[in-house]
Length: 232
Image (cartoon, rainbow, N blue to C red):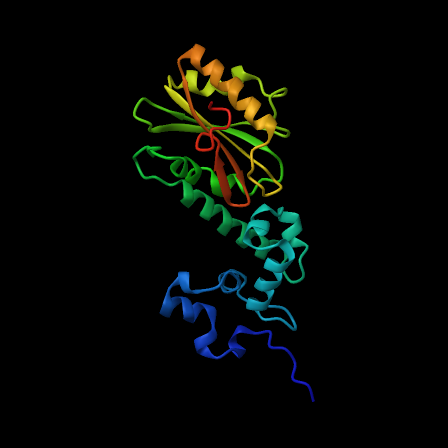
């Protein structure tokens, strides 16, 4: 007779149970499916919690897809429901907040990577294009991050005055633009280059430096300043 699939974590050998492995080896040693299993606690008939976690990853295309999924989409998965969906999305939100945590000190932007670290996790999760601005003081401390637009981000729809409004309000000396490509490809488009040039020209008149424009997609980013796109 064919053996039925294991669907209880307790049916696994102790050394293979996610919580015991986390305690012994640390969270970094666990797979994404195992970490999800700890949140889910139990599986469904025919699947243990690890298998359910792996199914979620497969259904949404990995952690980045699960990050982008709506509450309703997660709830609709077999064996999830509102309680488990809430646990998963709460964990994702904690990860987002941790990525932004900087203690009492304002983060210093010394490189494109520093700027991307403040935005990459969040912007990679949006299903629509969004335009953000980081405002900086004269020592490149980040004074704030603001979402300006949601939808199509192009030079014909973005009002330059709106881009500089947060910088003027905070008396900032510089800013960094950033927007996401929901397709996952962070390659700048011709319209991205046009927008960058337009904003830079306005910045010169206002005496506010536009230090960079980051394009984010699929947990990757491109610095337009490093590629001399719109910064010629």
